Image (cartoon, rainbow, N blue to C red; front, top):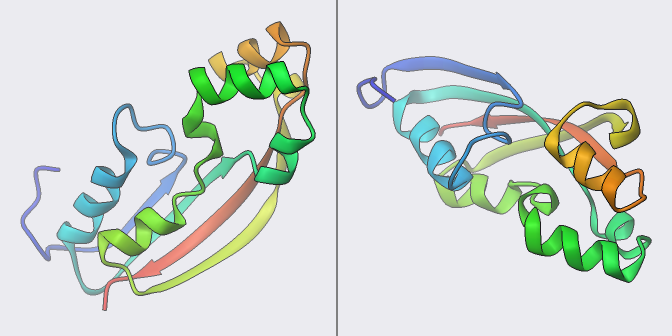
Length: 127
């Protein structure tokens, strides 16, 4: 991000980090870098949890893990590794690929499945 270190009070995103192309951990590290001490990152995204994955047909699991492993990342560990030490996650609901127009929804439909995403809001503080 084209901002100085420790220069921003709040970063808020509605799926931006979760939809980053490339390594999402780098986006979290950049957010940490530019936040002032005491600054907050409020992020909202979704992921497919392990229980949902385990309930899918084996062939669908293989294809999803091969083509879209990113949809199984909840980014908590990456948030910790970015430097955030105070992290609160609140599950805010869920959404299904049958109700969506996206590349992951198209892939799920091609596999004959309706994929459930768990949505969350994560509140992080740079201490």
